[in-house]
Length: 124
Image (cartoon, rainbow, N blue to C red; front, top):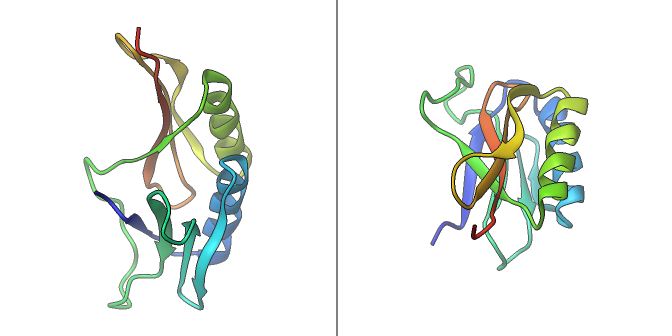
């Protein structure tokens, strides 16, 4: 249903470093790149994510209540994505752990403050 999600960035090279590292852990890379926009994922594949300088030229800001979630393959990958995020300028919003029946997740923000998570539906 969702093709891709875009988050705003005030420092695209910093965002590129952050998302390049997470994308590499998830086995994908950049699929589109322009001076003001980079997208990660696979062309025609699963949903991707993009970082962009706002088209209107105004500063990027964080949407209150907006969050992008990366589906992980295992609890170990949730941990790795969380660690990668923090090592690349992200900030903690909730360490990896169970979040109710059948849901395991870690929460973090990218360097621009966009809220993200890595999750796994555990089925238990």
